Length: 527
Image 1 (cartoon, rainbow, N blue to C red):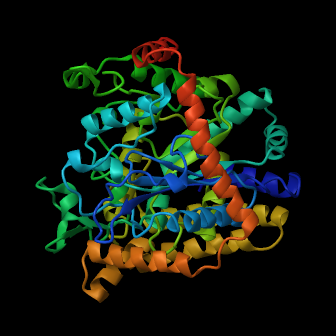
Image 2 (tube, rainbow, N blue to C red):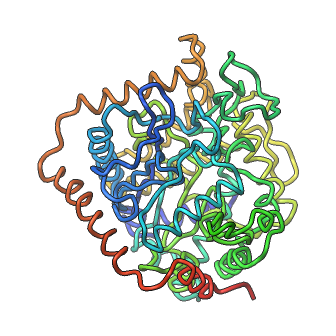
């Protein structure tokens, strides 16, 4: 039991303002593949009725032309965020014809890499750069891996929290430096405790055999078409998903914001021999943006990122250097196949209270040994987290997952009480109670429910996911039409986004080669 987190919770509860944790901003970025009626990856272009994938603030694409990404604004209440996400889904479903949205994180019916279309963003320099970057990802890691989908949860604490917390901590730092230091502590602790997110919200214990092809695997065979882990939680976040050997060697320090920025900048400026062998511009065509360890900051894979909203044309690291950390982006939540939009308010409310817990908890710097523990706990929970015999490693000693999870959720519940006090109601405590029940009953977790439904229906992963995809489309088709004022928001954004893209394309004054040279010349490399 960590005494410091208890003390900080106590001080916030009894000495902080009533609304000290109320109204933190929550946003969602949710990815879904477009697939044809038979479940194959869609090869159609991004539907024009959805607007420009480059400039539409609500609907864009990620790696592939077929990988839609729905983006909500940052809202003070989870119901506001979820309403917008639901409306975006409804707007999109009505404009993709007979196609479906794939509702699980792991894709299926995957052909060769060459058959996975890269996202296209038009003829502007910035649009071409986005596509070349994705082409580089395909060369480096394979295109299949890039089609894995997830839910990103963006969160910032309310503005009134920071001066109150600064005073309670009796810190002599400036408010901006104090905020960034606290957020970096949150980030370190999310890496320490983030295994609980995989356990509670992982929903990818199985995958199509076509996803890994002929590669060797020690996974069990569910049927002729499906691999699975009997106690798996999130294969998406395991060594089968968002991992690669080069980035496994890349250590970006979380000790401080300056160290984080410096290490990312180093990776963008440091040559990587295996990427040099790929080539950058070959026979007049760009294969990747550079042959360095990272092409740009976004290539760095991490379950959590410290972020700041960037100005037009501003790099993520430059934005952080300019104003410090503004919010965190959590990237380890699977699509919940049992929710039509892939996430629900209980999950969002728990995540909010859990992130406050990560901020309040003591957050020592990582040693090599503690980093190895973090990496091991994350990967092992992804594949074996529901096994009754599974043990996490804490400070060199084994501990049952349920024991540690009960300790965490008990403190998170006290934080939820403080949020509820400011918000009014009991929604946050109820959300934590839902997750506490899952700690005691692994069979009720989303990952266990996926396997249970597959067993009960006698279907493999593909048919299970297809049935869910069809039912989700029917769900949105049955909803009442969007009210005119709400529909106008998304229709206007789709139309004006196309015009914004045209303006960007018309405004280019240099060649693409010159644009890239200028872009990378402005990159500040490591000290």
